[in-house]
Length: 327
Image (cartoon, rainbow, N blue to C red; front, side, top):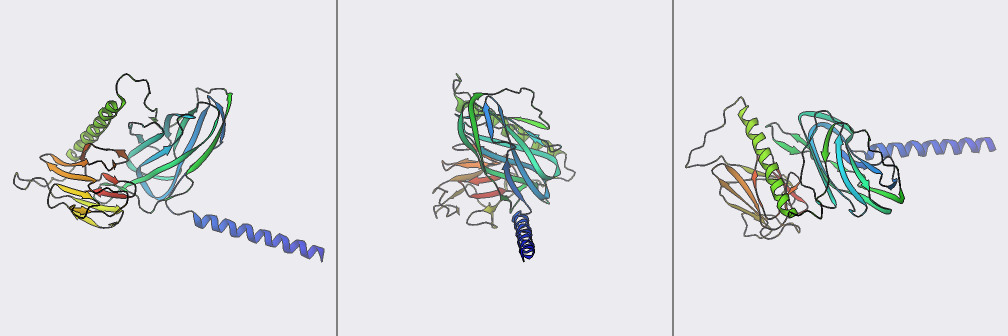
């Protein structure tokens, strides 16, 4: 009888273990993103390494991530990506928020670490890192950059314990792939930080515009001609997230006002969109987006109270949960 009971118990444990493995496997979606850390205990002065991971059945050509941190406990240093041909795109950093962006000219299969983010432990404290936002980017049939849909975000938080005892600083930690600097602005800068931020954003936009122009020049097909009377070709906004997800708005008449007010040309009834959120208008050389104070992001970069040139394939986010692709 005792031997029979042991067999029943062993069989029950095996069934429960197998059931748990099946559940965990089913919970992993085809496209997913998550944070991990090899260790969560550090000493003051040591380098904290956090891995930004992804699994995707679709090859990607870029990714972005935003990780929130406590600037009194941690100082960002840089990020490195082991993915071949993934190049870092330097962006202006905000204190308390790491903003990383990578792009590749060729599709890359991913299943594991996309980037390792490094911080310096400043003092003894208990803190946590939080994955604020992350996007995997691919290209559609027309060659425009678009965010990968139906991507689930798994583990967002990584809790850390930093001892006040000073540890051994390893200045030669191995880094591989494209290195992306992530140092926040210094508080004691003589020149206003916001001016430096605007200049940096302008330079990044100018660089992207030059690259886009070079890419267009190398196209084998001819671009459609436009006459002075008709101006530039008609573009559209393809809503990806928000109340009008899946719908497209052709920009027949410009300028176009976007916001929660029903009197706008495009009304988006979302609690995080203000009454007059943004405006899109055209000039001789293309389309422009003007933020009207609601908080607007293009390809993950904030353009609050600013004007930015729009390129086909740009991903625009209004507030927290409304996004569309300009094309």
